Figure (tube, rainbow, N blue to C red):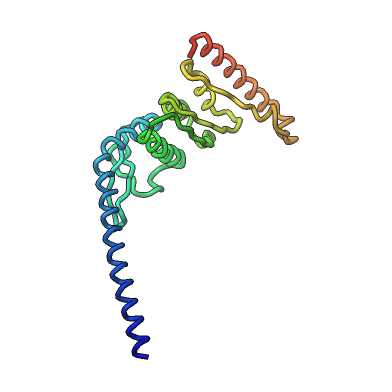
Length: 214
């Protein structure tokens, strides 16, 4: 029994030493990552600001800090106020702050064109913010990048703002043309009217782009 006890005690001591070695390596790696983040906060914050300000219309930035004993993380600073909780932003603001952050990451590490897929919340947008929302994605497109946007047919002017540009080549897939429509969709004249207006605007945008050879 003494032999067994000594054997396991030695194994325990060996694992404890190994644990200490890996713990130190983990701390070194954590400190190295944090050092890299701190060295690039200003640049990353500026990229985020360019996206978020397009939508919110007020100065925006990021703060890398710790609150309430939490690990350090990025917090959005909107019009000079740190937003520590999701509830301090509206639904549409949360959406665009989140996507501005994601697009900022892609832009920060940009080496070649990337793509971004997003389902727009245009139904939750105030009319005055729909153009701003379109400008956020157009700014990302001009890097250049590719954005795949899905949007419902409604009275929102979000899509109209997207197809009003003449310096970006766009493509449109109209699901009403290729998908099976429900009886409600098939009999709704307003949906068809909106859809036809969007297609007309899209065709006009294509003509402008081709004329400008963009």
